[in-house]
Image (cartoon, rainbow, N blue to C red; front, side, top):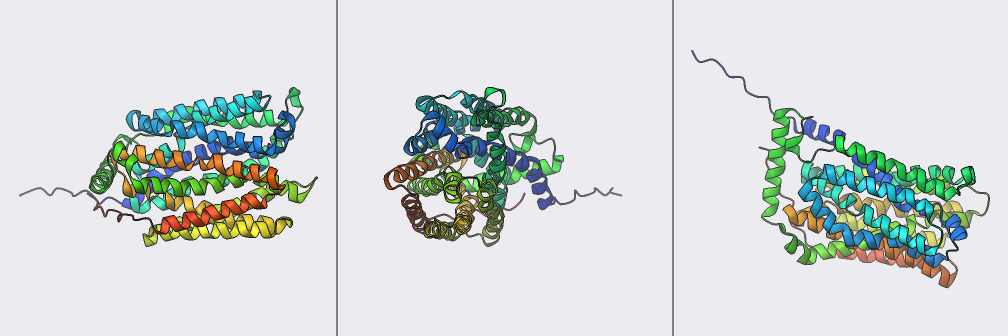
Length: 436
């Protein structure tokens, strides 16, 4: 009589992905919150920095944007190194170094040192964001990625929600132990990156097959599923760095991201100052600065889920970009009315921030293998030059016109162009991969 052999129970796909998400995404989220605070906290200290360092609006805008020049140059090499040595070591290295550089910014003393500090900070942080986008493609199937991207990328609005009151509190420490408020800001907001970098060595796992925190059958299933998806993508996507860097569609996505990032940082690095100027002296704008990003936080998750549910990407991005442009037009119309201005920026951020979670599902549709590491880094590198152009446009036009309307209208025009480019972009269908 043959003994019966018990069959292994089927893998609960949702349970495995839930475990992966709970393990990796909260930590990635916290790291991104800290990264965003460290790159945009000069926005909260803009008035003090301009006064103490003798910066004009143009010089402040230039210095704010210089971060992205160093960032751009080192993006692709950084992502290729991550692909070779693994996310665990490389993300830890990035975070520790950028935290130390951010803390050292407290020692700036004039225009030149301000500019130099921003360039070095950009070099130190280069590769973090595209590295995390690439890392998600190792663990999360394509048809779940907009939702997971949204959970990770909500860190950007959260960084402002958290960063605004924290930065105001740190600036109020002016004079303590002989330090200026903005020195305390750079010192204490840079420290968490160093701590998280050390923690990354313990928490991050490079690939599913190395995940000893999953059951053996779950680990085997996830590794096989992601390998099958990579194989399917290699048939239609650019698998080499050379092909991905020569792809017209990759460059078009880079331009789309550049236009969106110009708005991101044109608003981020000037919004506290715009609200302060409208509110007048004696009015705290910490809470008002945070409100648009609270709304964006909710919208990003809902729109990411809807995009995954429908499987549609381009129209979601285009509709969000148009919504953001409408918000900026309203900001110009209500530029002298504080609470209407906050509402206008809320509409802008609902659209503009929601672009991100869906946008980053598109590059992996065109790329595979090492080509994905190079292509994603290229898109982020070129795109983040918007962080140079956006603040510069706002600062230069403010010096030229004495107001913010000209800069806001230029950014709104960029969002409309972004929507047109996305609608006309040809994308392959996402591969349908049967679970092993």
